[in-house]
Image (cartoon, helix red, strand yellow):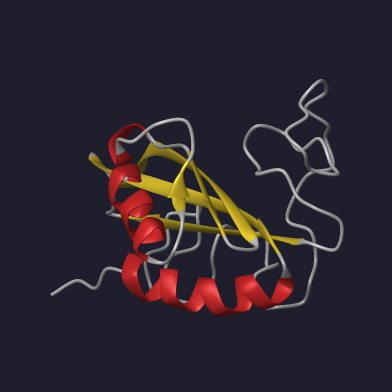
Length: 146
């Protein structure tokens, strides 16, 4: 796994640069409200974060070298359902039992003229559900060179 946005590709175990993926229950969100969104959740998360219910926590992980379509496919294989589309290539949200994920992708510079796709998955969910889901998602999403 890489540290999103810093260009390091050393597999140092960091993700998304926020340090909140160690199971500490810290909210990886920025506290900004999207305003006007109401899909049954107890918060109005920014569009880049899935809505959360009371007691849910947030986690964010980013990987380079996979597509948003593939990330959505992995989450569906882990029990999620695509929201708003049936096509994984178009999916930006996947909901599962006790969790939700918002997917985004951007092109980032890896080194020099080399560009890669970086997919960020922002999760909100019950602590137990995320503790079960995230290791499985990481295992599927991690790519090793060779």
